[in-house]
Image (cartoon, helix red, strand yellow):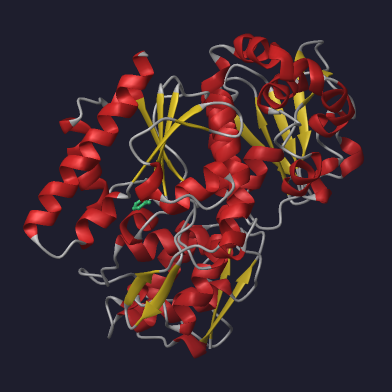
Length: 465
Ligand code: URA
């Protein structure tokens, strides 16, 4: 048996080196025991009678980027079996180099599940962590946050907080490890307990402003808002304390104050949108997140005057993480250009943010989202609308129309004329670009493409009007 002791539970580099050496030594997975210890020198420790792995050969096993990405996430999962499972996958890649693409393989599926749980935890930490202000020993201000991650994500996430709060001095305390930023250097310390972190408010004003600016109780129900913030995070969150105030202010907001609140956040709209997207990336509001690769959130400038809403990401969008990049996206781009609409004017999103499909062999066949899935995802589109307040919204196809209007709409009857959204905004309904791709003959495609472009031109003209 070989025993490999990794210096830390999230040390991908150490795992990779050890795994490479084991493969080079031809050691099968069932002969390796993986463990995590505190002593770095133990990294390649072998059990009493076994030699340490020899260094990798001149041409080591080459693995795909997909494997490295999967392993990089999955290794942060708290399941103690993760190192062994990853090594088994690596071992099998020798005979099946493209195994990582086989989403039906039980081992690949299990590791993808790990990776997904880890990504969700990373996003939760970004969205729900809150700093509180304390005075350091030398009297300077430091911001301290307490967080309880489910997986070993703290080190992997530290760079995000360094980037976002580069000019502040801060500490993030978690049960396993603490990380500290002094404005120039990141350092690490031992784990902490909740009582080590301060209670209180400050800095949270930023978040309160964000939430009050996007929160319109007439359309977003408080219950839904709280559902989105898992209960275990409530105690750390200033915006839950804000809910009664928001409710009391509902009438005033309805009569125009929301515009002022929006003005108040001004340049902050971009930051608010980023925070919203961050949360959406961890969305589990319906079951679709379980099988999709990732949330595909809307894209485009927050100042866009036109918002286009599609149905749901397709296969390529799901993999790329961006809306309308596949075949339907190409038709859409051509039509926008033909209608004289520039990208800078448009924000493009979908009614449903996860890819729904049915596996057929190695292919994933698009499946239509049902009413429950559309309803669950309305939470996001409503917030996108509130943040962007586009002059004109365009529903591309029946799913988008259903989501925006809250009821079934007949495209043939409603297209070509301005509609009113439930919040009073101007909207247009037209076909989905994939409809054009499905048309059987060239003549029909040409005619219908021209009609689609005409619809877009009408909607565009309404922006100026
Ligand atoms: N179809 C959609 O509705 N949205 C996309 O992002 C891609 C295809």
